[in-house]
Length: 102
Image 1 (cartoon, one colour):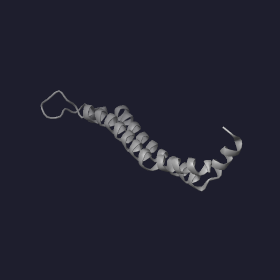
Image 2 (cartoon, rainbow, N blue to C red):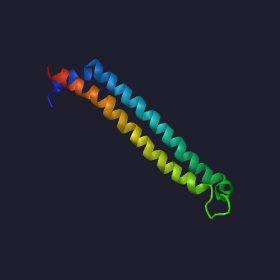
Image 3 (cartoon, rainbow, N blue to C red):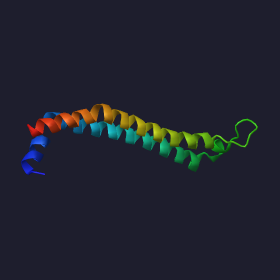
Image 4 (tube, rainbow, N blue to C red):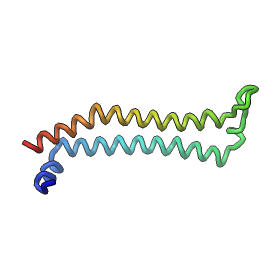
């Protein structure tokens, strides 16, 4: 890629907006994922009794749905990111690309 084009894109105000929004959103989702994942790991490490409690008279324990919940939460975060990226970030990137080629 041409250095002049790279500098033009890097200085474009909408690119800076895109970069900041995407970074802020990515860090927010990362922190949410870390809290959920490490929260679960800390429960496993320090409160085994809670996770080992049976639900009703079945063999299922509290830890099983919590573990599945961590996995589902990961999928939900991925869907949230993809939807926002497709709706907002891609539009901003297209706008910057078109403006840079003018």
